Image 1 (spheres, rainbow, N blue to C red):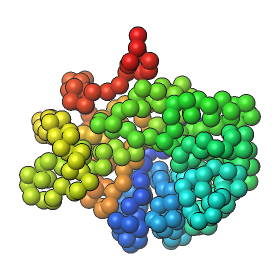
Image 2 (cartoon, rainbow, N blue to C red; image 1 turned 60 degrees about the horizontal axis):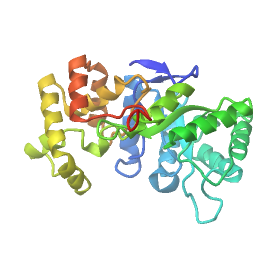
Image 3 (cartoon, rainbow, N blue to C red; image 1 turned 90 degrees about the vertical axis):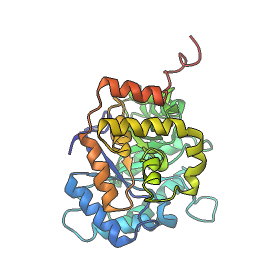
Image 4 (cartoon, one colour; image 1 turned 90 degrees about the horizontal axis):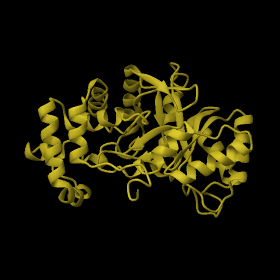
Length: 320
């Protein structure tokens, strides 16, 4: 396994991040524990979850039960979870108020059966709460030893810049990572988020690296009769069928599965720290790990850019 620093921090994480959103929904607890054990065996030390996953806390409980089995599972894991989403029916059960951050953090710690979280992440920007309040709450959590680092998810470039400026004004470290939707088909963050991430020294953690399965060899499986295209992919496949056909042909020419190419492309992007993989089975985990050995030369990268055109840095993408 390859490791790298998470942004400008001293924290070292694996080049793949194990996403746990399927645990408790698509994958039962026994199989979820087996996948996490296999991930550690592969050397994946970076696990991502959120308080809302698994019907408001179910996924965190699965991780907590896994940590409780011992074997230094918690000590070997860089644990990231998130706060923001609605966790109840009362007004202060969501977003980034100091009250909700305090309550949500304590609830996550209890479900996860741990006394600290390595990376506590804002799941979304909160436009109604001032940064002074948010950063004060995070400073308190750090001082209490409940969290070590702070990350963001689904932030725009200017949100990252503002968050960092406000943190620096308080002599606080601020953000060390940003999770964004990023894959060959969805490259909008190349306009402003990636420049902001690079300028601020944040690690970039792409989610949905295979566009919900669209870049995972959907046509090949369809042709082989191994599965029917899921309803949620039908419309997207119709809109991108020509590009997907070219992509799967290129993968075959390169001697790799399409999913391996999609992950490998992200690993070749300088700003990317670790794509989030979300295996539902052990076989899917094995397939994702194989992407670490895929090397794409300049010709292959250029061909992928032809199939899936990217974005130039703003404002040059749309102005001079």
